[in-house]
Image 1 (spheres, rainbow, N blue to C red):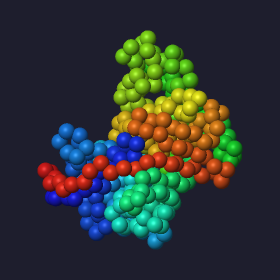
Image 2 (spheres, helix red, strand yellow):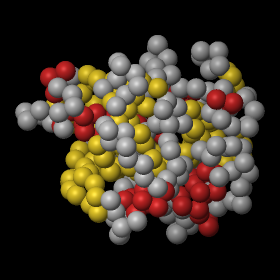
Image 3 (tube, rainbow, N blue to C red):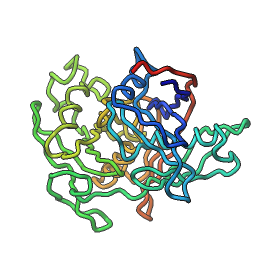
Image 4 (cartoon, rainbow, N blue to C red):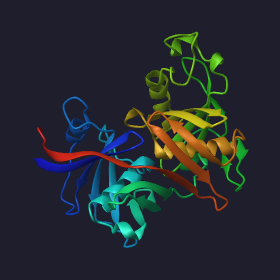
Length: 308
């Protein structure tokens, strides 16, 4: 099989885009894994098939598949890149300044800005309202707090691990997130850091602790696991994505972390979230909707022959 593709990224969270407006392309898990492999394939955190929408309000449908071949409901960085693909490749008029993207989590309206060549450079996405009820995240952890909107939710609930208990606030942004604020880095076990005398979010062994909690039984559909530190200049965050591992950025994770920081009183409801790949601006508005602003860029395009 031979395919034309475009690789795009949002703050380092990268994706292989393929035009499937014909709706005829079905890729196996092995083919997805090969495309995403950074040594033998193109290299990406996931594959996005661009398909015709079912919702006439939407410009196109974003069919997002994680690098392990599992289908994802939503991807915040992916939907900004999706908008860039649609604008830059003439599916949408650059002068429109707005579009709606269809996802498995529903329609996502967004506005965008373009450069002098009509290429999209950044987008602000209406990510909808966060879902907090435990069965909607989903998690088996019991609700122990009530949001300003009257919804019972899981706040700083303790979950055991081989390294002691960690506390999680659970949020769904159309996909499940569990946010752990590392308020006291010194309290974490030495074995989670290469240098116990230099404990920091950057040095945390996320591959070990993130993978453990992603697959924890309290998250029946697994979960994206965020570790965050609230600072004077915003929120620093790293994420272990469900079905993918650590990525340089996660848009829905940044949204969930902003909501969790607001709910827990650690910050206000508008924050700059600093990820290894860049900065996303997250605001939880009075209307209950979360907005996310950030960049989208093309890495390269090409033609590939799948070996499988």
